[in-house]
Length: 364
Image (tube, rainbow, N blue to C red; front, side):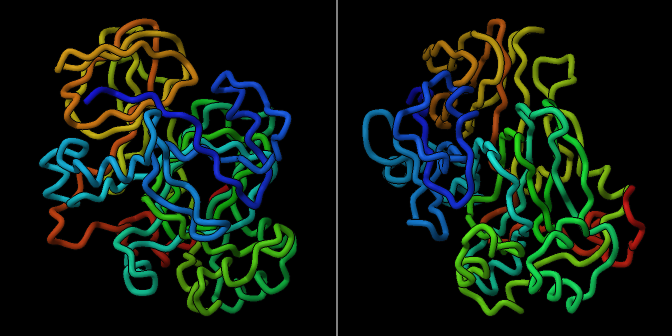
């Protein structure tokens, strides 16, 4: 196999956006563009939970990546991955252009997903900011501890107080944020992200009325009280919030980790910066996103692929080891190294320092 340049895959969503995705890819805005294409699902084998169930990535030669992977899972994923996850790629990567503020929402963790949604994956995610308007903002975690009744009251009101209950901070290009499952959050207008996720579309929409989201979809088809029980009501302290934030563009080496260390339990991202030296990495299923420059991606099996800013590339395991050369930088997104598939996957636990409900210190 060879690395494959991915075409755009932008299912229609309930919120506005998508022009920055087209600009980043160097594509013109179509006359028929409807301003509701804010996400580009890269190498996706995941479907939307609602809104038509689209999302599967198509390959340039025709057919879906999901079908190609099912036909040759070992070639795409490799033996170590197969031992851990069988034929499940364990990863969803997106470009996200927030043309308007997203609603306040939260994602189930793995235990909740297994119990209520018949899935081994929850939806911990991470944001890598590729571009942001001046003064662009995001929101993450409650500033003060909340009871279930207080959260339910805010959800019932469907007004500005829910957003005001969260930590708010500015973001700019180069910022990275890990968003653990359960943490309420929102992305502000003008933020353009590379987003890594567990491979589900599970979102509990605490805000939904102003976005026209049907309540059954907002609660994932569950009882509202059950759905809202996935939300972490604890205060997110300054110390804990700081551990969820990092920078992805400040290194001086050819290969460096791009996300906070806790992300490794769910997915991995490395910045390959060939401007310093040839960036060499081992074989493995991955999604490459190229934010800067031009160069070449070579495989140990003899393949060569010119790459440039605005491209997204999927690399099967059977390509072999990879070497990125030239005046170019790429983000390599990979599944977690993870446990053996015979054991339960790890999850952010209530005692791991990131979701400790007894820590009520508010971040400032």
